[in-house]
Structures are given as C-alpha cells and as structure tokens.
Image (cartoon, rainbow, N blue to C red; front, side, top):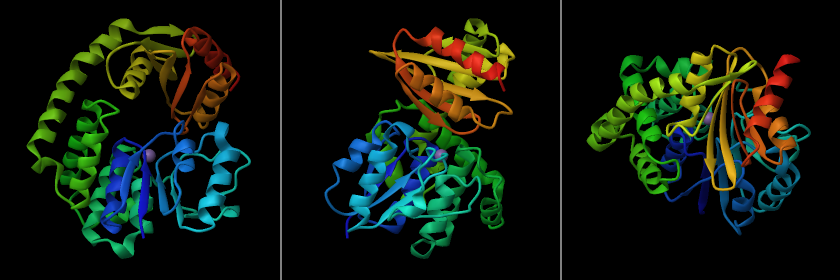
Length: 316
Ligand SMILES: [Mn+2]
C-alpha cells in the first residue's frame, strides 16, 4: 500500500520524515506548511497518509476535519504533531491515528514511537536529532533513548543538520528530499562532507548576522523587531528579542504581496494564540508554539502587527 508523508521542512520535520521513510520504504515525501496542508489533503485520491510537524491552522479547521473523515474512511491517516490544536477540534472524534498523552514530544519522537516495530532500534538517534532541533530533547522518551548513546556525539550531528537546513533555501525541496533519503538509512550527517560544508558556512554567517541584527533592531514597547535581514527568520527574531531586551522578538521578511514573520518570546504560554489572533485581524494567518510562532500577513501591515502584538502583551 502506498504511503504519503506530509512533513514540515525544518530539522524536526525532516528527521520525522526520515524515520517514517525507514519504516515505510516506498513512501513519497511531500514538504508542506500549515497554509498549504489543506490543498495537499484535497489532492490525495487514495493511499495512507502521515502528517508530521505540520500545524493544523484554525482558519482551515473544519475543512481539514472533513478531509480527515474522507481519507480516514478508506485509508490510514496518521497525525503526529506537537503544535496546539485549533480550539474546538477534537482529533479523537475523527478517523485518525495519533499518539496521545506524550507531553512536549516533538514529531520526530512521536514518529519513532509510533513506527517503532518497523524500525531498527538505532534509528532512535535520528529521532534525537529532530528533538534537539526543536528544543524538545528533555522529554522522558528522549531521555530514555539517550541512555543508549553518548549524547555529545549526537549534539554534533544535530548541530550539523540544523545549521545545514538553515543554510539552504527554505524551498530547496530537492535538497531536503535527498537528506530524508540519506537519514532514512541512518547515515551520519558528519559523514556527508558537503552537508558539513554548508553547516560551517552557515555558522560563519550567523556570527556576522547577529551583529547586523544588533545594529538594526527597533523596539516598540514589549516588542523588538527587524525587517528584511537576509537570514533565518527564527534566529533573527531570537536575537532581536535578546538585543532589544524585550520579552518578544519579531523578524519580518517582505515577500511579494505578503510579509512572513517569525515571533520568539521567553516565559509566555500562548504566543501561538496571540500571534494567530493578531495575524487573523490583519487578514493573515499564524500559529506555532508557546514561545515560538510564525505568521503571514498582507504587505504594509507590519507596524500594525507590532502595535497590536504589544497591546496584547501589555494585557497579560
Ligand atoms: Mn516540530
């Protein structure tokens, strides 16, 4: 039976996809994101699917639920994700397999646990790379996997993966797909010299770009932000927050008619909800995690976004 993997293109998504590919050798891998998931689901006619590390956006909640019903009636639908679900959506009422009660586990950990019987035990290290990439390596499950490894070796491998993935274009799906094939054979990132080279170039660039962010950062109340710095949006948001000395940092990238945003915070519990609601009010879309979120809003709305975000933060 044919399997289709829908995965996010970051380290966690790539590692989770590699794990599922190791378990289901003929699976086809498709990289997508929250905004694109619905149309990908609609285009599936037959076959089992796995969704890895792709948040279900509140905007498409009901349509996605009906796609899950359509596909789940005839095939297996496996949903392995750790983003908060849209309010009012209950996965347990849909014909979908998932793992429940695995608190804070990233998609790579979930994928390893779910497909464990079809995997070589040493694929656990690929799950650990994904967990490190998502700052999710301090869970009971990953701590147990780490008992079989020297974690210092795995941090080097994960560091190479994270840096290499940040160093290629987000949409370089050819690169990502061959990386998934490579990791599905449990080959080491450090054994691929071209991957190491991309990672080293990226860390040189990080050193330079941190200074650029420091010189460009602006602050509005509780929010620091930078616009169009040609660097990983997540890192730019993190360093905007750190150098602006606020609780929230935003990095914005103007792309055609839209602005792509990363938002990073410390000590909040619902950044994803705040980001989603502000983006929604501006005609955009957003989501993510408790302290790391992303959004896409129409061009020209950045300052409104920053102001509304600051107002929401002032209330909590
Ligand atoms: Mn993830």
